Image 1 (cartoon, rainbow, N blue to C red):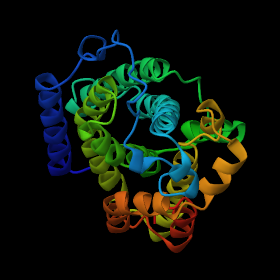
Image 2: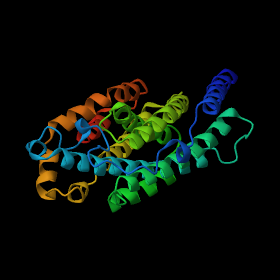
Image 3: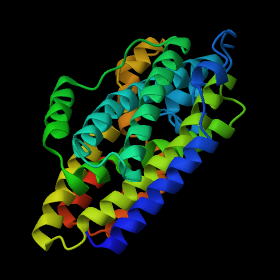
Image 4: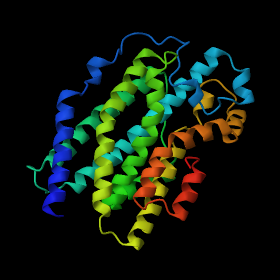
Length: 297
């Protein structure tokens, strides 16, 4: 890394540290954990439900719809916790034994501290929404274990960006939606504000690690990131949400799989992410196939 590149990276990290000092939240104090949840309140914007726009959705009562979005929001939060734990381990490993006086080192620890708070916040939020612990399928959990152990450089940071960008777009809708329970809007707002800094860092790290990378390396890591993105996105909405919301799980899963509304929403929300990956040379033909299979492209 040249001196100029190091200075730029240090400047970005220093600005992120300053932003964190000025605008960070304590979820234990900011979120109203004590007020009961109104059964009419949603956990997420209804338009983001996997059943929105289907024949089943048209038959559901408003309370059934709200119950479903509460379960779906908890499922998304649970997936967020799972990946935040992967993220923390990758960042810690990346900065192990590096210069602690470097602002990038200090920012990395700040980001990890943020993620710890976010995971606790998501866990408490899911509990308040009346949801169980939703987990990705076993093969995804084991794949994540392998990924966090082996992922390096741009593969790690681009995968972090994919997870954060997908969640960020939907949460920006949820935090402004008055149909969503007030405590859930606060959770979404906290996450959006603080994750904006994390996404900036992930973009900078991805660009930096790719400088001078060969075409073969870019193609390989494009595929690694796409696999990670596929399993992150397809794990967000756990199939058990329908039964836990009191619906017919077989019919709900069948209609959700065919729901073009949800797929279109995912694709439109990921347009900026796909543009970034393309500009970084990480949107190869095989990677595109995986993103299409996850309905984000």
